[in-house]
Image (cartoon, rainbow, N blue to C red; front, side, top):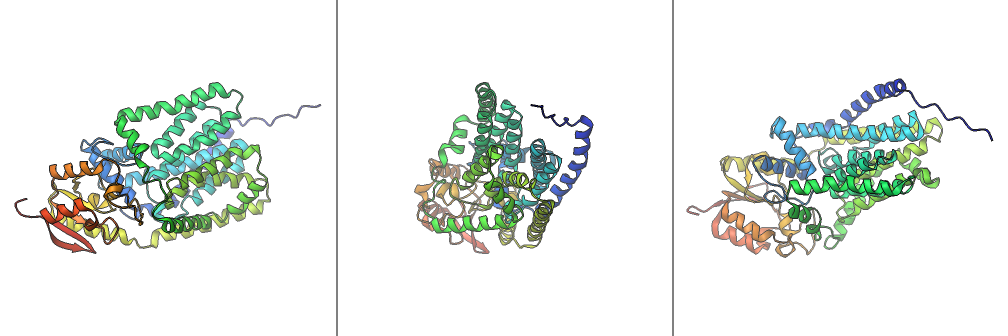
Length: 482
């Protein structure tokens, strides 16, 4: 048999020319798709939570001790670093970092696709990803929060595994996990590629070491026991379907439908790829499936969870489009561009009533307190602290950790006895040590209202009096002499 000559490897000059042309285009598209993120001071309570955390860390707070959340440390540290360089009065620096994260994700996907299927596929993957990356409710797609920063880490994990760089792949998986726990789902396709590699055993050792070292370092830099509790063992009540079944089902179907609209140009080729699936794309299907499990994990189905699906979907669509007539590629890109424009218009024009409420509440809070006063905002909008420039009286920045309300849980499992273990004794001690000058009841009829919580109800009745209302929120000041 005659040997089939291999295609010549691209020269350094060819590779440089390719990226010299593609990178500016992807950078411009990444910036364009993130324009709405810069038009509002913040997009959702997660951004507010991170902003308050970063300020507290800058003031000497310690993560998982005096500043707590159920999330790993990377994004709080990222916010803290941005605030240290540019000040804490605006989220513009982290919005710029989010643009860079999306650009890096697109570049890694383009590189993956180009290595497997050629130059055109590389361009297609990068462009398709950026077009669908904003295809959710703007408060989910445009916010500079956890999922946006997961994506380059997961793409980097696949990129390294595709080249047999197992130590680097493990480190990338660790970075994804340390950004948000569900980022660790990318380990599934990475493990598949390892299994298919010529030397899986030494690769497994390097992969395990690459993953373990950053995680152990993060635990040591924070508080090992607190790190384990807040990121793994302390969230069992949060990750449950009980109590809000219909509410959660509606949210899941709604966000699935929204993303399906954004991916209208990708769905037909992805379906075709499913019909012709083989070993060449098995890792991509595993990536999509493990990301879908990550979206489902916890049974909350918030829109930003769905961002994890977009990189694998873009690559699978690219794999299918390369075998179809060119007009199918043009149609997919055109449809995706039109859908992207629709979501950008939504982000630029849609009103955000909850932001307006938080701004009014922050104005009232700042008017009634001094810069050195500690305050308590009892609700699910921690951004009020940041907007008002006031320090929280407690490490628990929302009522969710103390009641298990957790982003919309409206069933029977809300109350003091469903709180994260050990939080109420700490909460009582903090309020005794740093009695808030003002308490804002921002429950507005939700299941975590103070009249349903004996500890908070007793505190307000014994030591505070109502002094005003803002859009349904009730303001309480300390009684004179307290």
